[in-house]
Amino acid sequence: MQNSEHVLTDTPPPADIRLNYGQDQFQFGDLRLPQGKGPFPSAMLVHGGFWRARYDLQHAGFLCAALTKAGFVTWNIEYRRVGNPGGGWPGSFEDVTSAYQFLRQLAGKYPIDAKAVVVIGHSAGGQLALALAAHHNSMRAAVSLAGVVDLRRGWELHLSNDAVAEFLGGPPEQVPEHYDEASPAGLDIHCKQLIVHGVHDDTVPVEMSRAYVRQKKAKGENITFLELPDSGHYELIDPNSAAWPKITDAIAKLA
Image 1: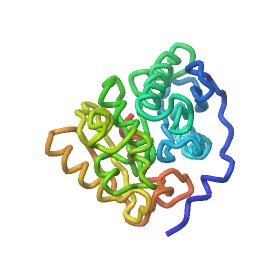
Image 2 (image 1 turned 90 degrees about the vertical axis):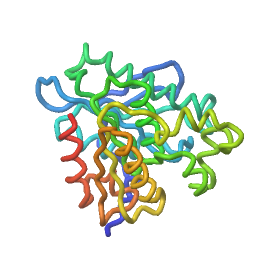
Image 3 (image 1 turned 120 degrees about the vertical axis):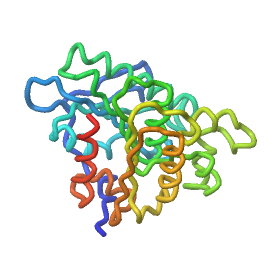
Image 4 (image 1 turned 180 degrees about the vertical axis):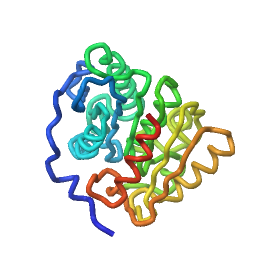
């Protein structure tokens, strides 16, 4: 299995334009536009990093550039994270919501098909993308790439030195309402969902996505699971990985 962690340090292809969706220094996103007249389907990308400030949107630029080449307008967003003033829950989620609404407004200025918006999140961003889908059903689909889709389980596993408790402000017994509001496992999601996970993921265990998909199918939600046998955590956002063609094909079918 190849190692795709180079995406964390390499420099991605440049975006076409950086736009502010709010007044805070972290409320901005990078827009990339395909060649041609459009209108094009669009993909909003919510990067991961366990919701912490030391991880930013740059490493998601590779995935966004590849999706733009495949015919998507991509909107790679930054947001306030744990360690930034206002970051954590609910501030990070409020930023993702604002960025999504801003993208829909951009359809009047750029060749964006507002009826074909897909929201994609990697790792912690998967939680934010699916939570967004639960609260705003205007998107075509939500995609979780190695997402932290069950925050109570993430707390039990103490993922990344209790990142879930940092994000939500405490363990479940202290702030149960935050877990109820934020955890996709407990939310009703009415749009299509694509859940992607690598079997060899040692950052977020694949069993979390497996259990989530079983639970959601039992509820009758529209969900597809793509399990990748030769992938870890970062192969899912590396366009040079062996897994990438399967992922981009699955995302293209959603739009």
